[in-house]
Length: 372
Image (cartoon, rainbow, N blue to C red):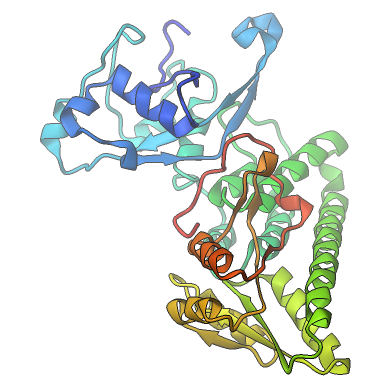
C-alpha cells in the first residue's frame, strides 16, 4: 500500500501468543515508545476484530479475507515531552504525522483499507455518532448478555436504514456489536442481523428481527431446560437432606429462569431449596439477583466463598457471556474464575450456563471489558 496512510501494523507470527502480543511487538519495532516508556502493554486497548474481504481483480490481498485485530494505544495527552519525542523506526514507513481524532476521521487522503473503521473498533465506538437510546443500552452493566442481545436486535431493527456503506462506515448493527464486544451473543446476533438484511432486503427487517428474537428465546429456553434438569438431578439425589443450597454469582436472566423453576418444582420433595447470591463486586449485581428470585439471600463475596469452603453449598451455578472455541473456557463477570477455583478446591460442583448464541468462533478470546 505505497502512498497510503496507515497505523502501526503487522502479522501475527509464530512466537506471538495472541494479537495483543503482536501489537506489543509491532509498536516496539516501528516506534521508539519502548525507549520512552519502557512497558506500554497496559496502554493497549483491544477492539472487536474486522474481516476485510477484497476484490481479487484489484489485487489487494489477492482476493483473500483478512482478519484484523485492532488496538488503540492511549498516551497521556498532557505529557508534551513524550509526544514531541515519538519517532518512527524501521523501514516500513517513510512519513509520520499527528492528527486530532476529528481531523483523522475527516481526512480525505488515501488510507489502507478500513483504517478508520479499525479505529472505531479499537476505541469501542467511543467516537461514533449514535442514537441516545443505543448509548443508554451500552451503559447497562446490570443485565446479562441474553437480555442485552434481545435489546440489541430491537435497536438494530429500529435504527437500520437502507443504503450502501463505504468500507470505513459501520452499519447500526456493526456499531452496536463493537460497543459490548465481550458479550458474544450480541456480536453474533448483530452479525446475523446484518447478514440476513443484506441477503433478504431492507423491507424484511421486521421479519428478520422477529425470527432472531425467536431464535434467541428458543436457545435460551433450551439452556434453561438443560440447566434445570442437571440441577434437579443433583437435588433429587439429596432428597433425604433437609436443605439443598444453590449458590450463584452476578445477574443473569437465564439463571433466574433456571433457579425460579427449581424453587417452584421442589415442593414435592422433602429438602428445601435455598438460593444464595454472591454480592458480585464491583457492580453488586448479586444484590439485584437476590431480589429477582423468590426467597433468595445475598452475601458479601468473601463470606459467600467461605460458605463454599465450609461445605454449606451443594452446587454453584453461574452464567457466561462467551464460550471460547476448542474447549478453552468461558468468559464471565470478573470474580467468576476465583469463585470456580474455590469451588474446585472445596469439591463443590460448578455449572456454567450458556446457550449456543454465546459460542465464539475465533481462536483468540474476544476483547474483554473491565467487568470481565
